[in-house]
Length: 336
Image (cartoon, rainbow, N blue to C red; front, side, top):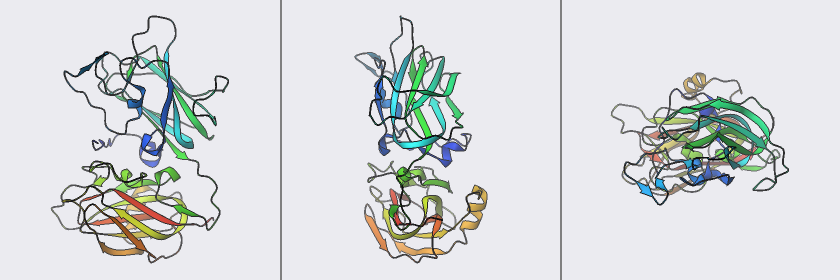
């Protein structure tokens, strides 16, 4: 798995919200009009799209994305994605990287609510992104201003062609958890997200919040080798206001590059706190877990952390640098 390229020019919704079209969280392309040149599953791949010179398959040039045949009849192509969890949507990225002479000139996005994996023909589709022009080999970010909760999206391309990736950023709807209910407060599928990280050279800090163990060393947060004093860190906005009771740190696949130790700080912050204020204040947050030694390629369990009370954000510190696959913060929800 290739480490994602972090785009400093991407809009804020790509950092503040979960990609609900991520197959690692359970999203799936459930139907499409055509997938002759490249299968629909590649549209949701969490890996960065690649171009391999000289690689062909039985249908023609191998492309890393979803690509339909050249349409010779009226109409347009489309695919339907069942989101990982019902949620409110804040923005999308239609990524045509490496598609140059075969990208669609335009695309649109519709949404629906359905209990079925494949929505029935009678389901009502609501337009969220009207047909917009596309360019080749480019990201196309579009914000969404809609307060409803949706289960499926339908990407339409006009009239045909190839799209490398579709990202659908939103806030997952979590089944009601009563005050005192148990929850992994750091799970992306519950709505946790990474506010900031000081370094993500080899792997995105958002991988820490994914389900399951990492599949390889690229499926985790890994910083560059530190050559100066200090340590690396990331700040996580929790899925819910809660009290952390158990911490799990997994260094799966990190063997010669795992951190020597880690610690955790936490605080109860207001919902309107800015990223810059969270970064500056996090240095002084109370300690939930004193520095603990880590080992290679192992799951580490820490019980009964020092808790100042309910928290909304945590700062995860690694000393001095290295890679961690997953972070779990199990606790109880405290409703305001």
